[in-house]
Image (tube, rainbow, N blue to C red; front, side):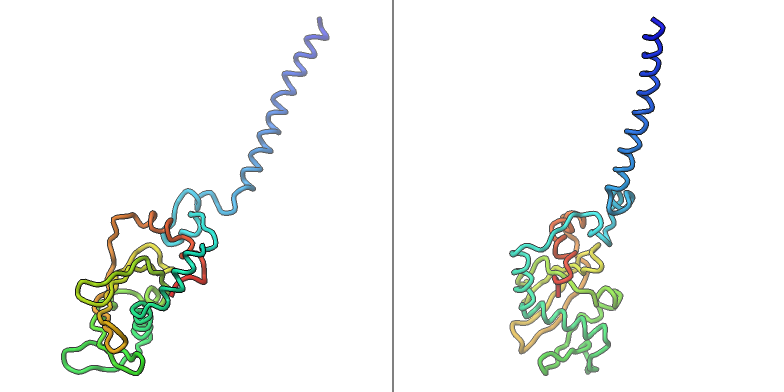
Length: 199
């Protein structure tokens, strides 16, 4: 009888000790498991979605779209005129026009240069991805874009013209989308996080 009591007491003492070591091991595994601090996983950072949203290498379709969009005349001209603006590299202009850029040996007005003044050069210098292009109601193309280094906002650009004979950046502003910025980041996360993507 005394032996049975000693066995039961020994078992009751061993169980909590064993549970303590099992839980401690499990806790250590959980801490080692995370690649980034738990705080960064829980708190999504719209300026750095690559930390909180899973991404992969861009798909064939994403890569083909990126290659295609890089050849779009209006997209190429937008990158060109943004670079001209941030580098202060434009010719003075007369009377009613704004600052013209020199593209393929020709001067164009770029009447939206005053729109660019409210944005920092760091934003405008960042590579951008194109979310959408459409024929603009007033002529030319409208472009919805996101700057890769500042992916917390969308922007809208209107390039007027038909061909390389005349192009004009006529409008540039922030763009309101019916989707949240987090939803858009999830859709375009591979392009945002891959260094080879963008213009």
